[in-house]
Length: 353
Image 1 (cartoon, one colour):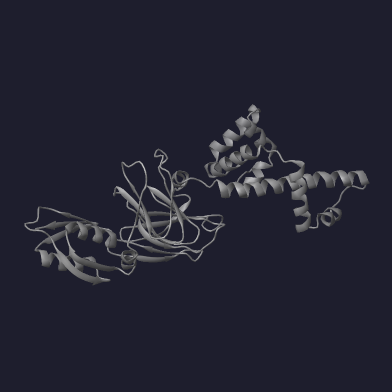
Image 2: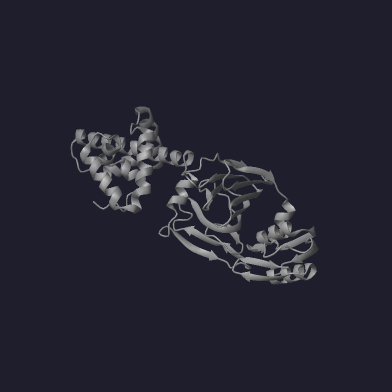
């Protein structure tokens, strides 16, 4: 049989699959283990159906069937449909056929309803989502160089401001049941509200889940820290590394969560909303800034790493403001005031004093 068109509810109404879940039938077990091994594209759905099978115990009570049946009768005039295509002539045959058909339909409706609840209350973890994010089910929709940004409009109307040295991929089935994107680098997300389709930003370090909100995620692969700043709404932040048992955190506006390599938990703190708005508008403001502050702000704005090649002869200090200027203009101005030259190699800049 071709299982390529199977949905989760199809597995739950397949007798051999139920036997496989129950674990008492060696033939069914061997069959479904082979299907799982030979069909990588079905593995996620098989796992979900198996978990749901355990959750439900594949038992539907009479009361649940009755409730489902009433919902079914309200939605569709089943009696008319069955009479129209009824192949039996005897009254007993009609009643038997009708009774069995309705029982199956009611049971299936209960299973499907429970599946919807199951998906809502037990969504995949960040680690599961990251593990399943492969080239086969995600496609590239945006990439930037170190000194460039890109505005991206997603199919559901949500928007992304992709910062320098970053890439964004989108799930092939985006906006079907979920809204999943894969980020490497930094981006600001403005998410259209849809409680039925959670929006999840997945990175190599963290996963951020939102329903309708705006927030910034920074997670460069080569950097030890990953960070989420929440501007509006609410988000949940969790680790995408299965080996790290971090407790997930929930943020409120004005708060940020940071995950640092080697730490045992997320750290939380406030952040400057004015600073985030400056970042959005590509506005840099320095007030008697030293080398550390300058390096941090240049990294945040342009996605580059600044390192001194040698020790400065005197303390670095700079005061000034730049509105939507490129990296070269900013470095030239700061370098002129502090007597250094620089050399850029990709997304790294060496300062020479």
